[in-house]
Amino acid sequence: QKEVEQDPGPLSVPEGAIVSLNCTYSNSAFQYFMWYRQYSRKGPELLMYTYSSGNKEDGRFTAQVDKSSKYISLFIRDSQPSDSATYLCAMSVSSNDYKLSFGAGTTVTVRA
Amino acid sequence: DTAVSQTPKYLVTQMGNDKSIKCEQNLGHDTMYWYKQDSKKFLKIMFSYNNKELIINETVPNRFSPKSPDKAHLNLHINSLELGDSAVYFCASSHSGGRTYEQYFGPGTRLTVT
Image 1 (cartoon, each protein chain N blue to C red):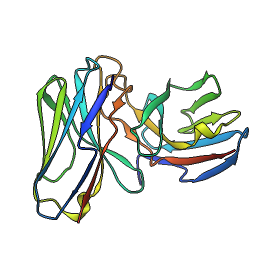
Image 2 (cartoon, rainbow over the protein chains, first blue to last red):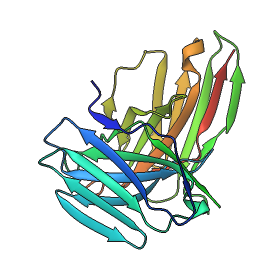
Image 3 (cartoon, helix red, strand yellow):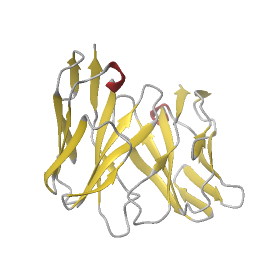
Image 4 (spheres, chains in turn brown, cyan):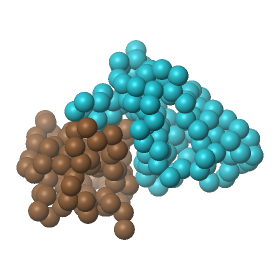
């Protein structure tokens, strides 16, 4: 069993829909939870990070962490075709932890 | 200005050959990484250097040898290439000291072994 499991997708949604992406994990020591976005043929880029449990909002993006369930989510509101990408969740034990554990990624296509 | 750059972008080679990938970052970071992304998009760390010192060395065949001549450069040399080495290799960099979760990735090197 992988340390981080991510809903495999792919997801295809119409423009304006809410996109919901999820990851579960097994290591209860994880404290930092990240979402990276990867456009086709590009490197991943950090979208958001959350420390411990709770919600974090950044524009149309909301990250949620539920440590009791070992479950994290990313919501994209009012999705746009420019949001079409692969979204990778990642986790680490501390802010000094060089090793990130990534999920396998979910590919999202937003149809105009 | 390109933050993390890699060369070459594409590499097509035959089994048994030796090849190198170069990476440079101009972000002033002190930590650099090599990742391998397979065809299913799974991103796996291979190596990491902090201030030219190897700090992560995952279970990788010893045909792979990283080298960091200075904090801004990290190279990856692969000997005796095999079909299973075909993947996209990403270089990344970050600060140490409390922000290692914020990693900046290069554009990737797409390696195809035939």
